[in-house]
Amino acid sequence: MEPNNRPIAGEAYERNTISTNTFQIWETTVRLAQIQTLIDKLCLATCPDEAMICFLQETDGQSMLDIISDDEEEDDTEPQLRGKSYLKRMIQDMYTRPQMIGTVKMILYHCLTTMAEKLTQDIKFRSENAEFFDDLELVLSRMTDEAAETTKREIMQYLSIAKKRLAKRKRVRDQQQHQEQRQQQLQHQEQQEPSSSSSPSSSSSSSSSTTPTPDCRISPPYGS
Image 1 (cartoon, rainbow, N blue to C red):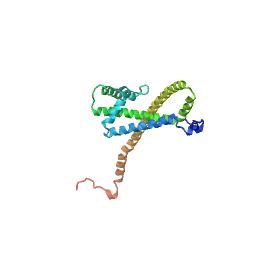
Image 2: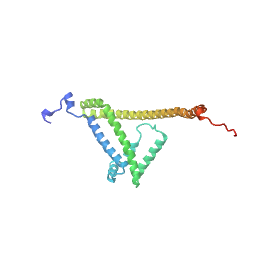
Image 3: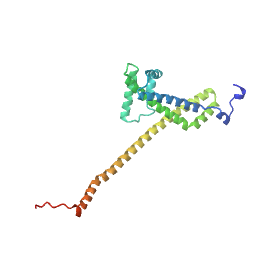
Image 4: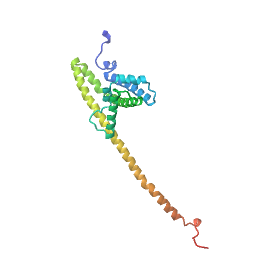
């Protein structure tokens, strides 16, 4: 490194460097775009076989099982648990015996969408806590390599747990919001039903009250 280009401390150093967190956000965003493109091609049935084969070669069976595995304790509903168990068995079968192309595409779709969701959560987490990651990088840069690696590994383990808990809370919050919206819709429908049911009777009563007018008299059914 030339003497005039050595890193300088403080704000000038921050202006002339890209933090590791920013670089990882960029890398994750590129990976997410690639996965989303593959998902779109799968949905449009235009995904070439080479792309699927490449993905399968890069991802072994255990990795695919890890992708769809739950982050923490199982708290999903019963149908979702059965669906995940069935998908896991299909992944295991895919690596032990030949499968129909439709089955492989379905497995890839579920794995890719789950992976895309996790990458999106990672980007959001790193973006919202960018200042923390930048401060962490600065602190680690002042440590020895061994101490920095150990400290970073321990901190990342705690951060991984924090991300999983945040994702779990988000799922619970989304479910609650969905249930509240559903209840509001049902209440709105129930409120509309009495008014709609009473409207015919009111209209009939109003029509009956207006029948004996001079212009609308009906002759009594007497014989002539």
